[in-house]
Length: 174
Ligand code: HEM
Image (cartoon, rainbow, N blue to C red; front, top):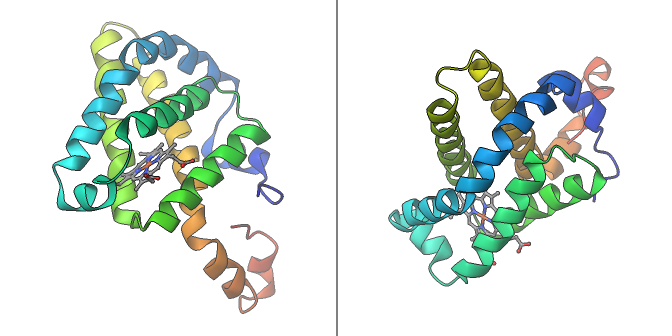
């Protein structure tokens, strides 16, 4: 379900543009080298928490690792086409259906973003482009989090739309 996702509008709001892609491309080789360690650390961290253990205790962690790897590499390829949108929305739906509460999901994004920040700082500490790389990482992970979390609010938002003043109705989408 991606019929009413206007990516151009989101890109404008988030400031995702050609510069973002240039700076993500600088970071991509570092991500490729570290993505598996990052995902392993992510699940280790979650499984040490009650919430993570409860939600992931019965899951096939190898399969989840592989799925998540595909997703991050797709996002950081900047190939943000309808296939990416469909995948991001689907992943959001799976978490919603699995009972991953928003605070847990956001903590997951925070974990990943923090690791990416550290990686970028470690590899580009002497590089004037570091700030732009960090900004590009923030923009892309924010887009992904927005699409994923929209699964949680879509129905309530659509319903509430009926009761909003007309001036707000024209701009709301999930
Ligand atoms: C940080 C961003 C995250 C990404 C990109 C991500 C990615 C994924 C992907 C790709 C899947 C498989 C979806 C499918 O079946 O098609 C999945 C499933 C799942 N994820 Fe996440 N995940 C994230 C955060 C989290 C967090 C914080 C939790 C909390 C424990 C979590 C718990 C789960 C659960 C319970 C499932 C379903 C497991 C199953 O089917 O056995 N995820 N995730």
